Length: 197
Image (cartoon, rainbow, N blue to C red):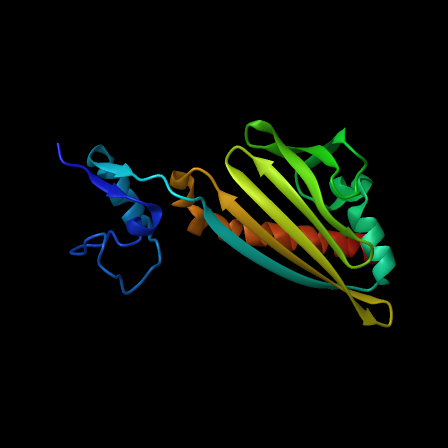
């Protein structure tokens, strides 16, 4: 049997009359392409490659001084109040939020609970805070930047970079990104309300 070897970028080119190596006019991944791929899976093999990366940026202004916003955001006691599905944080190594500290985040999911390994990458008081969240199917880096806007106003800039593993999961990242973006915006809005109440 002859097999067609594809990587996730090649699947974007699976349109009628186009070979995987042809340059497509439109790189959007439609559901019809996915279903065609699934129907043909008996003669298609996915080539392993570097995990797919997604970047999501959210900006929000909070009517509180920078020092207060920073202190409350890095405080683990506040996490269940503004992060949807967050249950608790379990200490593994060091003391959060110090750089290098490691914890386990416990979240609710459709199967009950999900554990994420949390590592503090950067702690610059009142300026920047970075963490890495790791799971068997993804690796996420969250970078928070705090900007003084004057008159007790703080701008929080959150940039989330996610690598999806394995490559097959990355095929569906086009559909996942929208939901992840909305969730990130909703979480920060809850934090804003928490700070401004």
